[in-house]
Every structure is written in structure tokens, then in C-alpha cells.
Image (cartoon, rainbow, N blue to C red; front, side, top):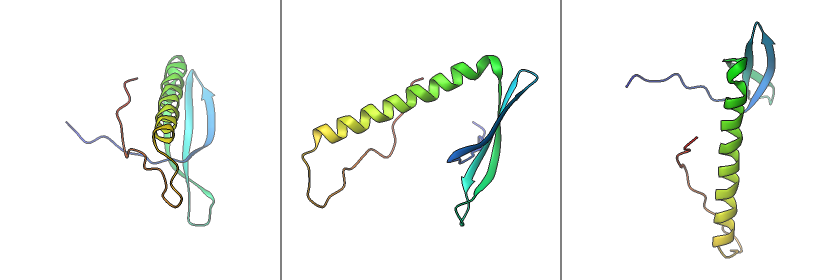
Length: 91
């Protein structure tokens, strides 16, 4: 399988819709805390609800997993709760 381009983003700098296409300019914070463009996500407007729904489902799964981890562990005085490094999303 060919390598996929990988973009890291911690925010959306700008979002526009033109000619039936949503364009989301992705950003990361640079060393000075200012946003710096990292890439452009282009999605047909008709597919935007499905994409947003997938991201929302992923967020709900992450939140549920975090609640499960917190509920399963007794509070430790100095230890931070250990959350899984990764899990697969089935959306």
C-alpha cells in the first residue's frame, strides 16, 4: 500500500465554501504560539456532513473511552491516569 500524505493540525485557520467545495486551511502553532498553515483539506460540500459526522463520532468514542478509564481506576495521589495510546475508529 502506498504511503498516504500525513498532515498534523491542531486547528482550522480558515474555512470557505466556493463552487460547491469546502476548503479548510489547517494550522499548527509555531514556536511563538502563532498559527502556521500546515495544509488544505478540500471536501465536496455534499460530503461535508458525513465527514463532520465521522469526526463527531470519533470525538464521542474518545470521550467515552476517557470516562471508562477514569471510572475503572481508583484515584492515585501522584499518578496520572494512563490512557491507551491508540485505538481503531470504525466510522
